Length: 132
Image 1 (cartoon, one colour):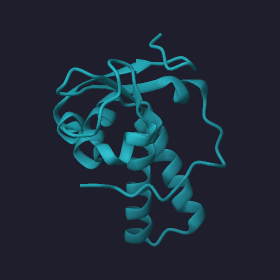
Image 2 (cartoon, one colour):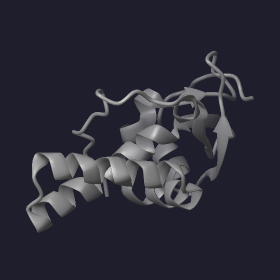
Image 3 (cartoon, rainbow, N blue to C red):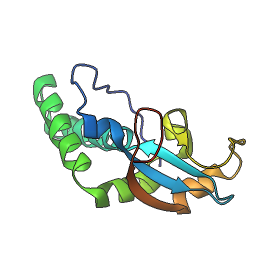
């Protein structure tokens, strides 16, 4: 299932840990890719905020508050990151944000399989995309 990330966090300044924490995914060909966990948290927060706004008739202000609550919760829960990413997002949802931290970049064939079933772990990247 693919979630649409129509809600952007433009009005909220990201903390340093939000910029450095990434989900590392090992693809079937051995390449390692790093996806910012903030992208995954945004996807989950958008889904639950929109769902609750519709279900409960929340105002825009309450919907935005729910988004921030869900975003903060997800950013602090590694299990949610590991669960949400492959079960509710597609490789195409994160590809533009992913950083290749392994071999040369290849085409996207097989990456959906890697996104769903590849080995994953949370890592820190510096501003140059190097693992710290």
